[in-house]
Image (cartoon, one colour):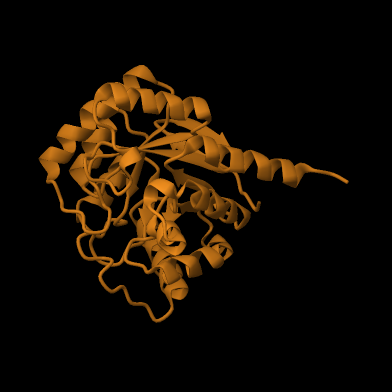
Length: 282
């Protein structure tokens, strides 16, 4: 593994991670693409959050608006109605947990920060809401910027690139400069596997993942149970744990800093085994 330590400054508390982070996915939505990630009620949410933390999750990623291919927008009020009570509940029960909020709406990010969110995870990198970047600059929270082509409702209909790797790298080079000009420096980058990309595009990005090191930012990889796994193998998302684990292994070997996953225990095991291999001596 080619891992550089990740520092997270959350509300004046500096967290230093000297191993890759595992981020557990919690969806307060009825339509996320993987049914196992949908939290149906508060008790289920808290049980799952506790299990993920005990399994070794470094961050919990909480989302209330599905961004799966074909997803319809629920509206800002509904997103807040789902998100804020759930966030408060997790923070109340697990006050030391780092919580990332998955939203592309500035006012949702602001309300989530007021409720205790530590990180903003934006699948649009500020492209879908003109208020988002100004909000993040004001909040001074770590910011995850993801690349996508199009919008969730139509992004997978016919994504096109001349050179997907060159275009995504160029996008982030400019995005990092733009964010810095706004005073946003604590940035993680996410290539956006499955967001306006074919399986071939996704595997090309994974194949060349080391190239993202040139950007000098922590690299988040989100391939868990996605179509690049189950379509390639001819299975379903529910059957895609093994395939996801293989790709998580590849991602860590190629320099990923953060794995965003549905299955925390298995991702932590990948990290532990690779660390054991790396530290082995003859």
